[in-house]
Length: 517
Image 1 (spheres, helix red, strand yellow):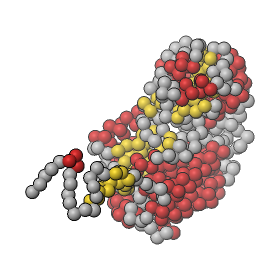
Image 2 (image 1 turned 180 degrees about the horizontal axis):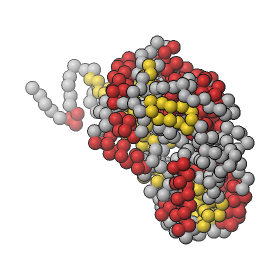
Image 3 (image 1 turned 120 degrees about the horizontal axis):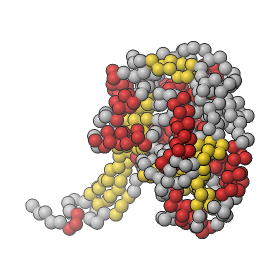
Image 4 (image 1 turned 30 degrees about the vertical axis):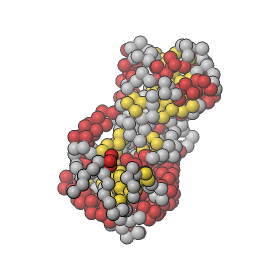
């Protein structure tokens, strides 16, 4: 691995996380091996090489599966509260390494340092949630129609859980899945995005340290590195009963079909085309804060990023002027510099997506009123910095219907009542996050009603971005229908079993059926 000549303590962070001079990516616990081709991770911040990692071959993959299936035999028999204690220790390790891991997330992915720290905090929070959950993996007790019988249900671990995560949240989404899967008694195999492999290696190193200190077997936490070919090994593998996949709708459809073809389970967290409705009763200041952070946070590369601002015609000019004024105050630059609001997009392919979207909106009749530039010069040498854009558009434009994973915000106008705005909001194929800005109780309740938002997340007077781990996270339609993180999302990582116990000397049948011998 080449040295990283940059400020902000990146060298120190890489060393602390054990991702300097890495030659291997595949890992079962603390045992590392890789025999595949080499991929390089370059930072979108300054274009410098972070490191080179060998990818996972089919032979490497089979070693990982053997280790995982073997470890499951031990891990599943450990009482859930004891598994929770291991997760608690993992959370404490994350607290110790929060600053270093937050810096790596910021440097390898490009999000602001504050967002990097926030992502690690999400990992810590889900560990805390999982520790409590380890004493609450409950079933139900039901009354039997047969005398002297007791019925109940319980949950058992599935086995090996496969996790495929995206570049935009290179550590948190893995932790959402892993912390819950671990307390449920599952073992995990993780394929992080090939765009952020160092974040994956860092997390695996932290986990391996905890499992080794507790004298637990290799294979409870596993890492594989590579592109879609490595992901295909997972989706086709009948030894992996659950695949949790986060990414594009296109990718999710492929995963869903492959896993369904072998009657496996999939948890899909896919695209979003999220909107904020701004009614005549909205608080303008709150609207601007929610819309701007939602649109430019993580450089518009969150699945919950605000893509559409649906504004009542009576408020349109006032809201537009306020949002444009806020955009003109944005500071763009190195995300490790906390004076900056916006860092780079992940790579030059994302830059092209940004440019193509703005060209298309103009071709369809819209108008770009802010942004559109790719930034160059000192501090922007990586070629991955763009100025967040605002475009005036119509709801039925094809580009507006499409999710562009870049900082592009479309301003849309509606007339009439909130139901007209809801028709626009729900008129896209994605259904992840939504919000309404209003001080009108009737509008808020209509938004949350059965005739309101069709998204998995519906917020009142907050933006579309920034979900807490206590609630189930996910969406409907082409977002995939999966739920991660809090609430009862843990149930997807377990198999459900109904039990009936007869404590009499007779054997009555259900429904009053007689079968005498």
